[in-house]
Image 1: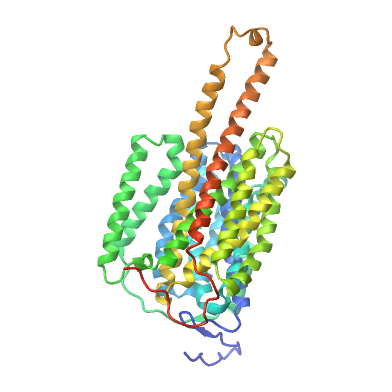
Image 2: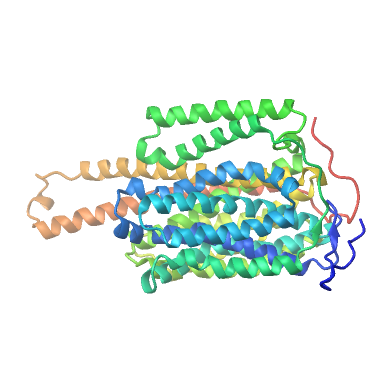
Length: 515
């Protein structure tokens, strides 16, 4: 396609990018995409640190305050499936710029919130562009970058994807402790402004795609299914996994998503093209990514929890302990991207997952006397494996898709990551709560008031005994959880053996679809 003539202003026209032709100058546009992706991923992790402070200022129960994160997650689950249609309808470049502006506006509104209901409402508005940006940036990256440079590009892109969740708790802890919780939202505004300016001047123009009528029934069924599923994961621990509301949500989700699949297979222009599930390399990458996401978010969530509840560290210091792993992943992601272009994903993923599994196994050695140095070493070792594997998995799956399936593939990839991490954390949390209850009952069942070693203890000694017993129970549940995560990671390494090995040709046929 020939670029348009220069405008009267003298501004140099941007190159027009086809569906996957790539452009010669792709590094600059890639950096623009990293800005938007990093901002949205960082916001997700940084807000969690401020929740206790927000509760102190606005009041409300723990269940009420949890809706700051729950409402955001529910809207993401609804909006992500629409990104393929929106990208074709509005245009990828224009949609990216609009979403950056929308995210900045939503962040500003969150910063001026005057009550808990107003903050939750503004988080809903913020989540709309927050759900669009991660999905369309991956689609844009796929179309900007030449196929033989895709691994290198994904490695650079992975700096934002991998490092942001680990940097969030540290940055959030600092801002909340020394500045104020509102700045965790205001900080997005200058980042978004810079992103918009860079996007206007550096992003290429994307070839316009044909658009069709919006798949209303497909949207309604997937929206209901995702909201019910994510809500069940979010509230299962507090409502009870076997309670009627949770069982009702899960049943509704299964029925709605089943109906969504039937609709998408019948309509002429579906909201998401489900034929991506007939391409084995893509499906296998989703399986590996699901297990990988569970392990990554389990470590990012439970290690800070251990540092605060067991070792008694404040939030900021706990964040500083987990920050080195972010720096390690930021170094490993570009390196793995370059290796991907040379040797393919198979051995990067297998070796990375095995390193991560060994590091997770070391975490089963957590005790009341574990030092922060031990934890930094274990998390950094795991970060080496994650840095080798994570972006290689995504690159492998997306590079297996035909250009016409890219938008649907990236949307589905984002949904699977969100659902798998939510399901994994919910299952592991439920297991830990159950184990803690059983272990507590067993430990205290061994102690009786007539025990001669207990009867002569004073109140202070009894309190200390109860506290040490409680901490030992918590530590045991943590080690059991990391043991499960270890074997899940080994399973992901096994699935990695089915990934492609060798350099991806610059051109050639795509993998055949499964019958």
